[in-house]
Amino acid sequence: MGQRSRNNRLFHSSIILLLVSLSAALSSPFQLQTLLPRPLPSAPTLSWHDSEPESNSLQETSELDPLSSNTTLEVQLELHHVDALSSENTPELLFDLRLQRDALRSGTIYSLVSKAVARNPPRAAGRRSGFSSSIISGLAQGSGEYFTRLGVGTPARNLYMVLDTGSDVVWVQCSPCKSCYSQSDPIFDPTKSASFSGIPCGSPLCRSLDSSGCNQRRMCLYQVSYGDGSVTFGDFSTETLTFRRTSVGRVALGCGHDNEGLFVGAAGLLGLGRGKLSFPSQTGSRFNRKFSYCLVDRSASSKPSSLVFGDAAIPRGALFTPLLTNPKLDTFYYVELLGISVGGTRVPKISPSLFKMDQDGNGGVIIDSGTSVTRLTQPAYKATRDAFRLGATNLKRAPDFSLFDTCFDLSGQTSVKVPTLVLHFRGADLSLPATNYLIPVDSSGTFCFAFAGTMNGLSIIGNIQQQGFRVAYDLAGSRVGFSPRGCA
Image (cartoon, rainbow, N blue to C red; front, side):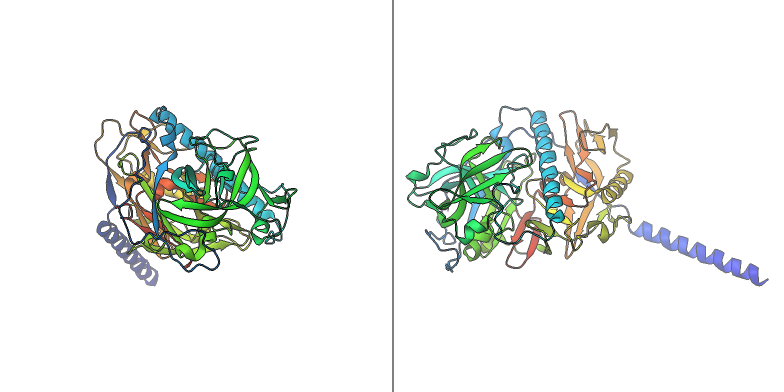
């Protein structure tokens, strides 16, 4: 009798739990949002709005001392996608080239982090290693995806410069060229600039280079070499950079006389990483160590993307997540990703431990402007993908495409419902628009889930997922913010 009573209680308890579960499921339906399928974009038209209305927020300055100046500057620049330099290519070819650059860049990032983590102890600051070290640059990773136009020297010569949050060293091609790749503008001639100055070998700036040397006049030389065999070599110097009407003096940059195998079109690179020689680190208090960018969806908007330096870079209402530091590598922007939701529900197989960086610098998550497709460590990717597939059974499947294994045939569709997707960072839940994770890959109506898995423990949040948000880097506060209306 007692056993039967116990069984009845268990049965009734099971029924109650089932009813509670069904009630919760009914009260929390699977969340969907609308995607308006747009075709692959053609190459954007390259045009620059050089004229600008007067603004009190832009203060002219020159030859500032980066260590002693208390002048705070604010400046906004246009950004353009690298496809604008390939207007003769078809949308399909442009997308294929983008995926090729993406594979090269992500591979180089993983290689760099692996080598840095394997180094024990970490490289000491100022250690001289000759010309054998390998450091990272957006150009060698298949080029940075976005570039701007700024002035170099006095008087300023306007040049196309790639911007890259995964790189530190600022450099530009210089004459005379021992070997220079083709670029859109004339090669910069330092002898025609009144503000160009070499850096002595014994200076702290020279010692900050991963790979440095001296010429016969005891002036600093730099070399940046890459895993794909590319290299830039020349004089390490200081020069004035002009952003529209705002000039910033004594920026340490490489004046490259021997540049081989690099990106064709731009004159050089403006490194926006966290290392000592990056532009944000060098300018320090001039821009209050703040910058942000907003990358527009080129298939939906004709307006250019933008880059802002200074206090104006931090939008009101932005959601912030703390920056983490890799003890072995200071270039990248590490953040803490806690989980992912699909359709309004946390993916159960994804725990924070999948994205955790250990004490040796392995694993973790970085935000990168030059990687297009987000890479998630394999277990997290599979769980996210499977949850998305379950919520997208209403969509007609299509064959895999390149690195994408979850694709759909949306040909003839003008509007479809897709599962919502949220990235849960510590302190900031990033709810993505459908266009940030279901993207066109051909001209036949094939759309693919724009995430990929990686066997590496390091995950990378790419620029497709960042589209439409103003991504704000507050280095003074050691945090990164996201504003969904940042491109307005």
